[in-house]
Image: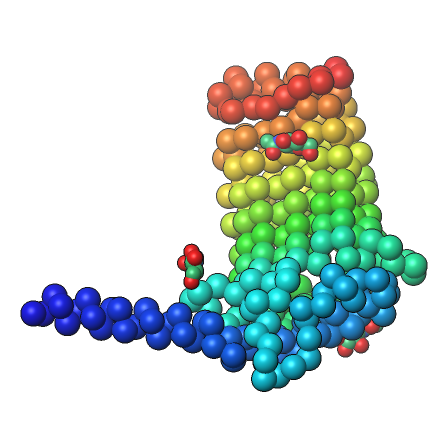
Length: 266
Ligand SMILES: *[C@@H]1O[C@H](CO)[C@@H](O)[C@H](O)[C@H]1NC(C)=O
Ligand SMILES: *[C@@H]1O[C@H](CO)[C@@H](O)[C@H](O)[C@H]1NC(C)=O
Ligand SMILES: *[C@@H]1O[C@H](CO)[C@@H](O)[C@H](O)[C@H]1NC(C)=O
């Protein structure tokens, strides 16, 4: 009897959650407005993407923004958007391509943000990023970002995965490192022209497990720089660098890491 009651109330609860999630009001109003703001900006830059974002419509009664293309809400976030992708939508922007990150201020429950393939040179409105307190994955692959932007990512304290391959991060590494990215587990910095002098900046990343430094220009190490390899990460990728043999040997000797390497140009 008692079990039956528990099961039926559980069922009732789950049904309620499903209804809530799929109802017309399944998305949070200020986030819906935020998406429309982003669409307005994208279309003002490249009219063509009006079509790609045709599901993003301003119709309060009939449109649940959780079902819009490139948008996902989690079942348990009561309509808050948790995943958002504007991959490739601003690549053809005619002006110096600076992203206005204030556009992302409303999305405080966001876990994943995909900004890849846009040719961004940097951003304005720096107040946007620190508000994304729950962001776990930020994909900035294939932009035009310089080393000087890295320190502005420090406010993303929940970040676990940061993808920065195919950018222009070859100097101006943050001297303070990333003291607040205590949860960062995966960092992809491949294809950037990065030199060994970046290594001291990576020292503070205590949770790092996978570091990809493949296809960069690392030639020599200072003992201080080498320190990053004694940290806790378990996968290190340094193929396509002049130093890869040395690093692979060092890592293997010290920790027996799972080390990926190929095309060693040493
Ligand atoms: C969310 O609900 C859908 C169906 O309503 C289900 O397919 C999906 O697996 C659920 N996701 C999670 C993370 O529970
Ligand atoms: C950046 O976006 C915010 C929010 O939409 C807006 O208020 C602000 O005017 C924008 N700044 C620029 C320089 O476009
Ligand atoms: C490192 O990056 C290269 C090139 O982007 C990729 O092919 C490789 O799979 C990555 N390795 C790991 C371990 O993620």
